[in-house]
Image (tube, rainbow, N blue to C red; front, side, top):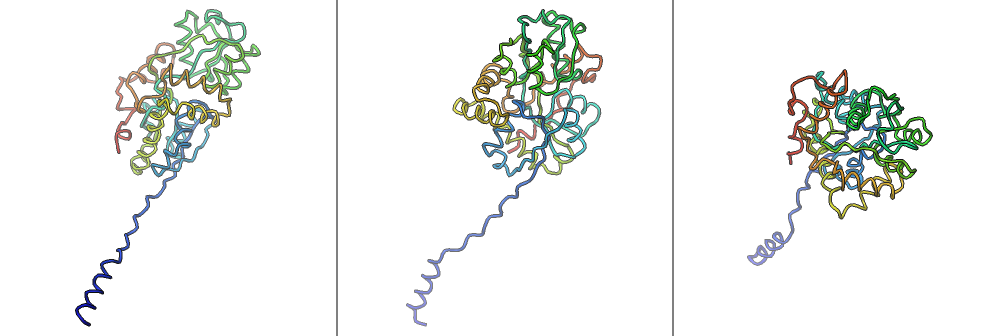
Length: 323
């Protein structure tokens, strides 16, 4: 082969691009997450799903609805599911009793429950001796209602507390006189107001109403997925506070709860703009857990915790701070 032929072959070889080695796609991990019935408690979860924040973290969330808060906690503790969005007081109690769960973030760092008076109830003092509901008759939500009543000058020992776990049922009960006062969660509190009922009180101090909890053995052996789940909800928490996302956030809540968007808009005004209940950056604060414990100790014969408070017993911030 002549010199010129060899040179031409070399040039042609250099011109052929080298095939890039295909990058190995990161596998999607299914994570079973236990939740309660659709409400604003799960707004961040609905946002993360709608906006693709789970998918960005290669997480496929399988939502499993638990029949009650204790059942939800038991499912996470036993490993029947990997994670859950639970109620703060139940998690505190379970961890103190040795349950293998940990909080990796706070979905709600303040309560979004509002005390609503039934038909003809304009002031909290009118609830003296009346029938009221907080959903359950024991536990953190019931104790929050007792604490609020006491603070408003109503003897909580004098009211009759009944169990009505479904928020829609509580609105109906307020309207027909079955109960005269109720703690209601958004957007059902606004539904009650639309029917002419009045907001009597809101607890405005830090209160980790709904932490994200992980099964500890699973989180330790599947750290990337645990981090991914936590970071997706953290992104949703930051996203909801951006005013540019207001209308989309309202639409997501309306679709998730099957409630009129006009009602959900008022829920946004209360939860995001007024109460600022969504935990900033998904962080769990010491005050948010201490207040739950102190309220329980003030009004309950069976408080959530009797141990000296240590934030690290309940909360591992490393899932939030990881990249």
